[in-house]
Image (cartoon, rainbow, N blue to C red):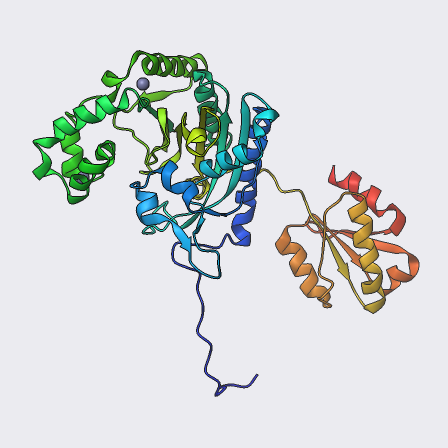
Length: 429
Ligand SMILES: [Zn+2]
Ligand SMILES: [Zn+2]
């Protein structure tokens, strides 16, 4: 190779900030996570739905809240080539409700159970568990009535999903944020409580106090956490309907012995939430791995007929991170792969047909038809951990036979080509 070229090297282009590749080494884990999600969805009869990654901006503005953090600061909005006002979806629920209304999906069932999986986008400062492109798997139940059993079912499905991924030490934190009738009372109490303490709050909270006092409970600044300790408890402000609903949800969870703890400070970032909200944490990690809640007005907000709903979303990057950090083994034994070694041009041509023969037999076989050296191919077979290598040379090609080599002992035997599938099946058993 020429040593130094005069041409300047092109600069390396990296992925955008907060967006990452899922490389081949991580794919088995990701595939497993998605597969388990699908199995749980199938078991509880959630139907899969896929919506576009781009949606009209206004789909999110009002439902999430004009003054919510996501709408104010975190949406990726396209401004180019006539597609102005399209947003990369920051979450999955509003698009599903949009689709539910647009296609009249209520006819598919009452309640309608849907699940989704895919990338979401938020312009955030990347840090542990926080990305600008991240994947969520979500369960939604949209129904004609707001039966608390659906809240419980969404939480149970989400919890089982984590359980099947062997995530132990998870905790469901739950709260009720009331409805349109009782929430204003709570907001009033909250503002009264904080009025005299306004000077002690962080700048963000002073702003929130004016426009969205509920978010004060969410502040992560130390002095604000201290201040909220004596703030009014939202559960005391719920009207009888919301109280009854919340009590029922908890009873249903107890019925299946699903552990939960009450967190009176839990409020979710989006305006569309009503009544039940919840977050699921994993011990030792300070971010929620799943979260969700009830959204009784969202369908109406988006122009549909009143249909209460409830849903959850699990952050897949976050659970993959935990599984990797804690070395949780969720991948089963890999099916043994055979390795086909060819020597010479005649064998190479006929080796293609052998690969096809094994495919038809439903047996996995690896080959390196681009490599011609016997040593290199044996090395690959070893690296792959193949129990048997099949050696196919000039002579075997003429005789319609093939050599089976036991990679451990090195023992070899020649068998007729038409019998090799059966012989290997027996050996692998
Ligand atoms: Zn209420
Ligand atoms: Zn604060």
